Image (cartoon, rainbow, N blue to C red):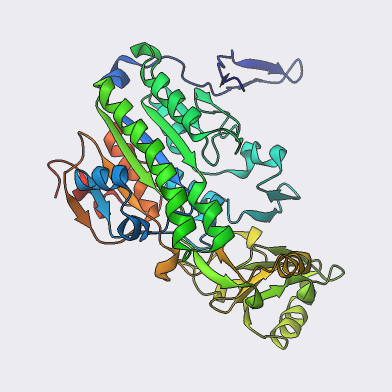
Length: 428
């Protein structure tokens, strides 16, 4: 798989509507391919996502490279995800400093009224459609400062958001070996100064996969996969150190994991009614979109009367959110399973029984559950050594990245630098 280098430097297009009309110009945004003189003086950041890496894994299993990285760097007791604590919403929250309600990626699956289509994370066409994504993710914010960027996977990095993608990027392919990703990141850091990316994102799915398959309490399976991942990360740490560059490595995870017995799976088909409403299931939250809003109260009352191991809410009254949800793409009714329960398809439930599986790992639940918490670790010349802060919300990672890179922090984000700036050298 070859790297796609997006080099877009287009002239303004002048369109004449009629002989007596004014000329209308449309500026096409371009991706930075050469660092400005100011950018070359900035430090470097590698933002690493360890999908599904629960807050307690390092303490439980003591992976040597990560443990050493943390000991000489900074950490929070845990990283608190946004609701729903699912992969795509929280990766994009980390990338933008915005809650899902504001940045638009409200679930791994959701219906968009503006696009009149359903966003699904395995649908390549929609994942690469920048119209679904709001906010200014960190690679775009860097691009606006004429700073070269790179991504070996991160939610949103494949999409033409504001007409921009990272200078160097790959379309997601889960079959790419971790070693290949690390090798490429180190090659980026060896590029000529003018073209060397100062902001790099990376993604590793190992702990999410093993957590889903075996649950977060299967120590044997977890430690086996964690030590393999730790070895790869150790190679990255060593390679970065050998460059001699002022590189700050920030490690985060999007969510934790909770053990869910298959006996607590709820068949989503029992709640569906295609004639009256569209049902969008994210396991821990089900969005109901009435096809005729005049039927909303009737639908709500009917679902409310059927509550069993779940609760039904009008959207504005739905719990677990850090705010009152306003994005119309949530729909007007939400169904939330009771703690420890999970919505799935009947076919998946049957398949699990046929395989004699009794438990799985799931996430997406209320961020107040400690099991849903992820990690924030960081190490580099801009950061303190051996410094620990209390649990912190993931919305605050973005302004920290901006501060390290000397980028302007947008006014419209939900994150606040003051909540996390104490991890920086010479900051209280």
